[in-house]
Image (cartoon, rainbow, N blue to C red; front, side, top):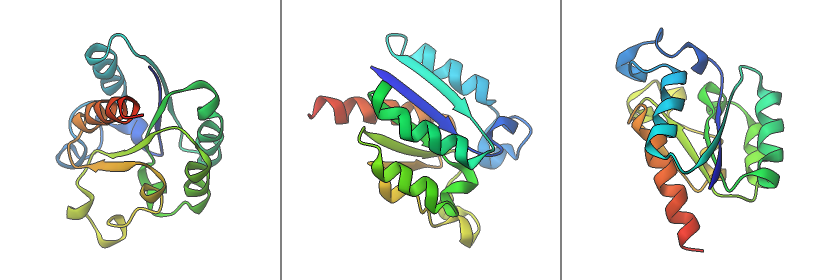
Length: 143
């Protein structure tokens, strides 16, 4: 299985951010965790603070991958354009948030992008990414 893992703004700063919200692991650590837990899978990882770069990757994902994991970061609450790209992407998609959005500021409690994915995971820090891969497998196996 080939999975693209997209991470949005400020996720390159994991390890320096509030560990109560985001955990202690860096983005590189999360990437290694996924490769270690799922050694038979091929992952491509991409992080950007630029909305258009993330949209470009979503638009091309269906041509090269079996599934998509996205942590849009702050764009999940603001980006109609990213939402529209996810809607057009015809492979299974899981949105992941390290922090528990339900326990955050009011503006973070609503995701524009999550409704255009198969579902979202929130609050399990790096384990949310592991759960997303597990769920992509389940979605694939039900086809």
